[in-house]
Length: 435
Image 1 (cartoon, one colour):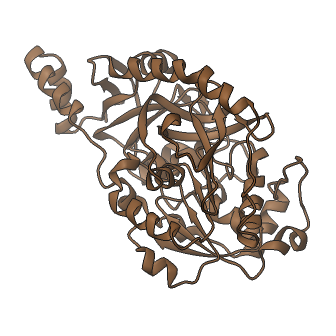
Image 2 (cartoon, helix red, strand yellow):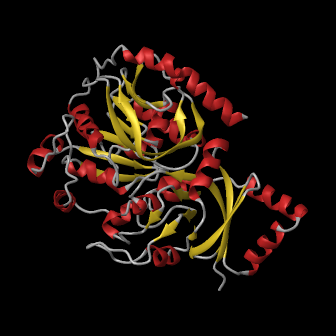
Image 3 (cartoon, rainbow, N blue to C red):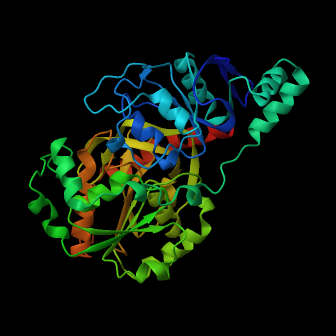
């Protein structure tokens, strides 16, 4: 079988390399992520549905496959691109190597290309669609032949440009449920690998009785739009009973569970496509039940409150995104994976911008003062990634126990300065994306 493989971008650029994983032909949205590790979590993060993911770190797969580190039961990326992959992984938990895993999940991989050059293209031009061509099937041969003919290549590029991620949330909802574990198992594994709850002062809570004390007897509905398994784990570590419900659930069905709180999970796609979910969130807001949103959940909560979202030029993907907590002025390093953001100037007057991205000033968190709800764009549950902001799950427990917990939430004076200072940067980013 041929080891040839290539990526064809919608702008006509071609990156030729070698094949690993499955062979075939697929289209997807080409993006990059900057994490140095965490490739297992990246591959199984449902938020990457429909996307061809490029790892900027040059060597991937060196610690192999570790099933306990997966964020869902299967790989969700559309295709996978690396500079090089490790054929002989070494780790005491290793269960196999990445090539075989990709083959078993029918995911096309491309390696031995200049991933730095590809990343620069996506940063300068913005994310765009691409096509991975791998192997020597009749379809792959036909696509390669089309690249050698100008008129046929033009048709191929039109095919690539026309690709659109569809039914994203519906396609990934509740996949992580298949690998769920009970609270005691979750805490025991967390203690073994030092991923126990981290408090706002940076200290770790290793005693499960203390960590779970305030959440005991409380029930949270995890409204699953493509949830990472670690969101549920962090809720369980706080003693909360968690009921996972599909994205198609109605507000009435959620309320029938008599939840003390509702978690809006991460997920893939354009948040504004989820019209029905947004309407159902509005119904839940009227019931005054504490709500915590992460990533897509953050965006959907904002849309339900009248804010707007827009697509970023190349998104935020990686474990090194700096965010400033405007309540304290402290900067945290966060893990992120999103291509859309809430527009700062559309946040309602009844809400406070709580976090901003210090690179581009985009909205990273909102606290609502008229309802017991708050949200963040980044992933406080992130593994692999910084654990510094996992204290936000404790804040959620505090809100459940006291609905007025955020009533007097105030950002520092830096809030106004940050919004005005970064407004030109945000507008410049939008303009470059349009152009």
